[in-house]
Image (cartoon, rainbow, N blue to C red; front, side, top):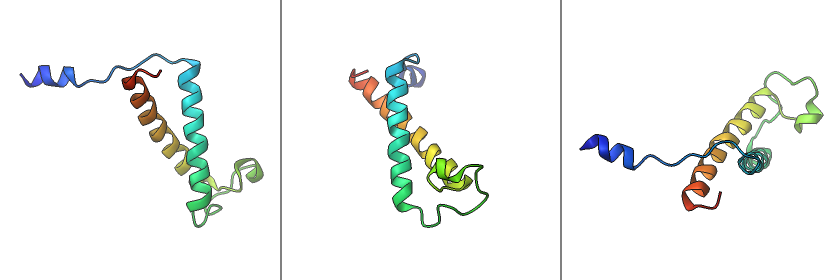
Length: 86
C-alpha cells in the first residue's frame, strides 16, 4: 500500500523547453538580486577573472546566489507545471 501512495504523489515533470529555460533564468536573476542586497561581504573569497561582469561578487557569492536560483527555479517549475501553467 505504501508503494501505491509513493507513486501517486510523484509530480509530473516536463522535458526541457525554452519556457522552462526562461523560468530558470528569471529565478536566477531574482536570486542574484536578493543576494546583491543581502550578502554582507559579496567580494570575499577568491575573486573571479572579471569581477565587474559578475557584479563585484567573489566566487562564494556567485556560487551561493546561483545555487539558490536553481533551487528556487526547480520549485517554481514544479509548481507551475503542477498547476498546468507550463
